[in-house]
Picture: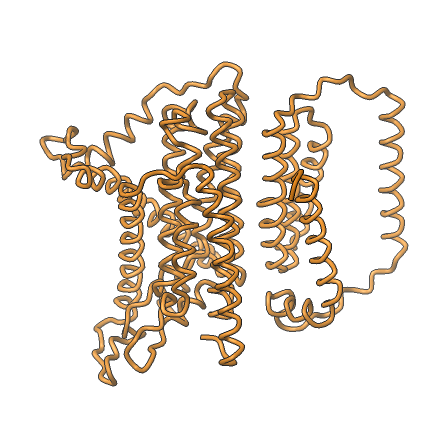
Length: 163
Length: 366
């Protein structure tokens, strides 16, 4: 991916992510979250992982955040009018985040970059990904689907008084 | 490099213009077909120098100009930014979805082979579904930002309905994807060029008739039109999520609706009715039972015929959806949800399992 494109996208993604936590209006926060996820999906395009890009858009931006928005509207959540956190909290959070970023940067600098391994023809294509998913990673895949099933059943049990 | 960019832009512009033309025709059908069905004359007032063109001037010139010149009202207490943004979000994904729909095979000109598809994407089906789900944001935000209870109810109904029917739509498409063994729309259309037993075009409808019915129903529900226009339902919610919109913004919501109708028509054409395929037409002319009728200047005539074929099929299914709209009454909300979750969803699952079983038994895809 072109370095300039990457930097612009990265800056926009971070700006959108900051907007998610700084907005006081939950609808705007949800929209900023969609923007963050959509911008993040662009990085997958840069990696030529079109399938992951499309799935990111369908699953996160298309389904999950729509549900967030739906719930915000249904519950009629209003603007958060509580007072801003005090300077102590801000300093602590900013310091923690800064330390984390510093750690990641140091680790990245100290690890020698040996170049990316070459990938075969059709890497990241739907066929390739499906093949890996249903052979090498079958058990994690099935466990994940079981987990989702448990979550759905749990939601039904909690939501219905009498089944 | 420069020429490649120009070609890519040209294809995109061509596709957008094509969509807007079919959409305009859809608006014209909406007015005149409804009039014929209800035994009226329909739009015939406006004319230019006495030329009314069967209501074309009325529907395609007078109405849009009137919309554009009307006062644009933002209600008091509305969220001004989102109120402005919602119609844009409604239109853009609907138009963007057309990027992966092929409108012809290849055009070989000047030593170049140009695929007649705006974006060749190996995950075309997923892209279309993603764009369809982005359309929900327009509805939800319009409902929320208007500061009006009717709008809010319309927005909530719209989001619930669109999420529900997207599942049925996706399941119907899984059957199609299993049949063709690809997510690429151009490759799907190419596979529909085969002939079964030497004479029957192998269109998707023959392999996936149930998926066609499911997709058609889910598609009409996605475009939020009667019998699924609960988000709008003028007898209950004034006009639902776009009650508080006027002028050009209202026009944009109407436009999004009609573009979605054309999108459903284009997808039905692509998945089930051979896309740009014309039976027996190959790259050099018609091949009928071993006899070849070569066409003059086939390099340009064949692609033109293919684009025309795609266009005619799209217009037909747009027309069909408009006839459906003016024929059926509206569902009740519980009926709508019941149809989606207890009707289409199980049928879609059965279709997927049956398709997978048949493919496994025959050991081959189409």
